[in-house]
Image 1: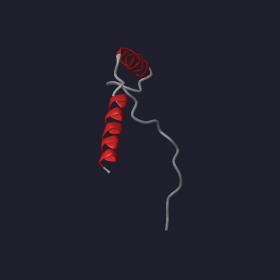
Image 2: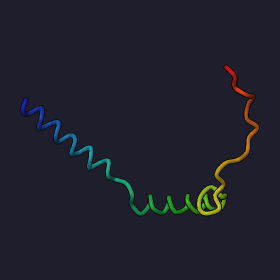
Image 3: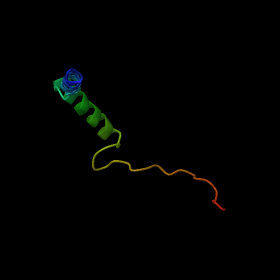
Image 4: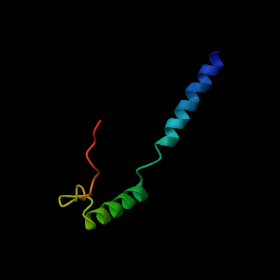
Length: 62
């Protein structure tokens, strides 16, 4: 039982260490490019379009 608990704890530590492999320079560069592209299309930033009009549907009645 003790060996199983130690094994479980070690697997959690390894999983957490692997999961933290993000946010490097490559990820930051991609995020910057993505944000710039979204701003150019008015999908982000101060001038972002919040929604586009749509025709909707008829009145809902019960």
